[in-house]
Image (cartoon, rainbow, N blue to C red; front, side, top):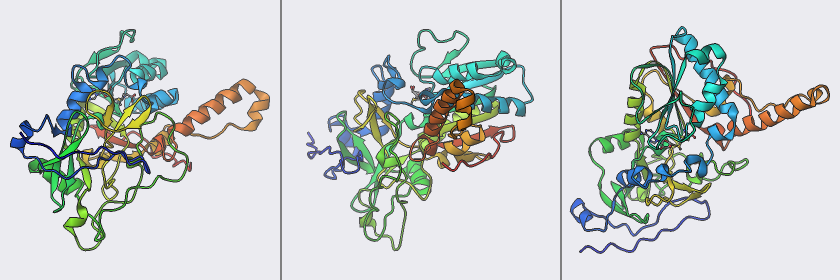
Length: 408
Ligand SMILES: C[S@@+](CC[C@H](N)C(=O)[O-])C[C@H]1O[C@@H](n2cnc3c(N)ncnc32)[C@H](O)[C@@H]1O
């Protein structure tokens, strides 16, 4: 029986980077069977999140462990409702207007959007929640709960923090600079497997090549200036804007050792399938993202549990997530922008109300002040405002105006 080298699982406490240090063992496919259940991160995550006792099957739902924009403020659902009205206009007010909440959690966004619509639009709107978990008790009976997007609908498909939970495999460069599949045990310890091949290798080469500087791998990203993201928001230190990963000077394969990439192919396919379900309208994916030229050198795979970042352990005890290469998901005609820009164009701004209002209408002033605080959280730098929005029009012109770029 193969004995795997001892694997250390150390959290890098200095930067709170969730990376695993390992002895560099390489396991072949044949050895895998006898290697005590190691497998790629994609199947391991699939079972840990969506298996019979998976993390996302639990009764408390995602909101029991972290906050998304949906939970941060009803202003978010209000902005998405305004976007649905813009889509309605571009579609010339169809008799039935779909709102598809993709990866709906417990249906919080679709509920909020339907409530925020003007009466005339609401009378034609039909809400769908697409979710792998079971329908929650007490959800508005008019919302349809589905395991896959409804086919050929007309309207807006909105996927908030869905793609980061679509499982994917991880690659790591070995001492020769070869990208190998990272294999993981149920306790989260890792070994290197076979070289990445086929379509996955092509994806890596195109979107996330594991190359390094002549002096070695680029250093880990530093925490950005400004306040940390609010408690419970799933932004890992590893994924915050860090130095770009890329080839600077002559290529040295040995210097690449230890660089990691998350192979986004399954997310590209999942997004393409969701977009294809729309007859006409707009598909939007919102997620923490990175783009070519500035990929995080050691990847972003991490865990979340009880509102805190934790080591990714594929045993069903925690969320397992990785930031999204949104540029790779984008199909022809797509637009990429930040949440700050998108919400600015939809009228969400963190501007404080004027002091004059405090003397004429103190209640309205306090309400406006609270709204400004929530808007500031949704658009904050180093937090939710840095999320990427991928807009994919289907058979209509892009309905979101450019809007002003808020300066905050
Ligand atoms: C991070 S939660 C986001 C929930 C909600 N959209 C929000 O913003 O609060 C991701 C959700 O996507 C769901 N999910 C993942 N893959 C899915 C799929 N293929 N089809 C439907 N739902 C999926 C998970 O079960 C989970 O509830």
